[in-house]
Length: 470
Image (cartoon, rainbow, N blue to C red):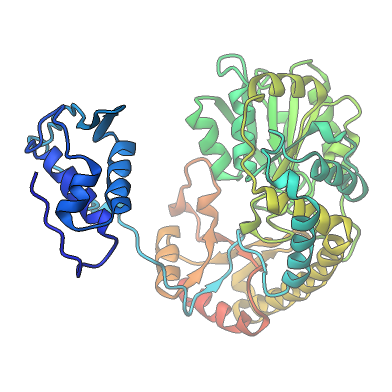
């Protein structure tokens, strides 16, 4: 066994011994079950310390290159030959999978998915986080409940009872990193042959894609000025996914008459449920907050979904779902071994942040900020586009729809927006059935205003005007 040690080489000496013995074993220069020199003999031969050789042998032993027999020494393990020579390895990432670090310099965002972090009280959040580390060290060192920490579920139950009229027990709340995954978990509990879903069109494309991935039949229901047209729902449907407090993406607020129609539909059959996605209902301008559909949930027919991505920031990754007791039993039976995905430190910090009153103060502050930005953005749109734009101005949420007169296609508008570094989404993204653009010179664009600075408003409108060639 020939090993060369140069003490001037960088790195620990035991690593050089380890590497060379490993190489000799893999190249078959050291045959299986060959006995190695004793640790003392090898240390003397190489003129190194005994501990250096021990460290090298122990690492080889741990990785399975050697085995030891008490009072006899170390031996080469019988390792099968790695037959890889006939396989052509993929050394480069294909072009379609290649990623680049995106440079966001110069971009302006009119995205509905963003949130304002400049006004978020991070110092208060850090203070709460420090207190959590001191107070809840034991809880952080253990796996949380599959549905999320009880403390936070209890806090959320109190919060949504007072702000959204959602009356539930903490046991009914399920916390996860996203509403998308919560809906996916719900789909796992359903039978694709006996369960049929209905949802709004236009609507949330990611949910629609999820239904398709799990091979569920989905009926697309049209939306009018009062929200989803429940009278068009197929008799076979037993689940209805809607956004009644701020329809996505049109922004329509469902009036009480249509809400009662939806609830009556659910009550007509035992297996019918409404899934209410209450994604940005905390923001309402000019009037009070609109109560949730769940606040009329006297017969446990509404599954409620909420998120902290809009009120705080998307990177927090905390959403929740409230299940009727009957469905909760089924959920716990299926997901009893689930590992909670949300960050435990973040969930306990959120509990503290809400308990100390910081959350509601922040929401109130941002409601005023977003109202100001929204009004100025609409003023800029109407002054720059005149009669070439119609703003569907519902005073709620963090986005609104604007319709522009233009002969450009949706694809051309989207491509120009990229070139001009304007993050914006067209109605094509949310229309879940084919669009015939040739018969319509009006294009809908979703205008999000959560992550745009006041000083960027004019530039955003000028870029949008260029996108539309107006």
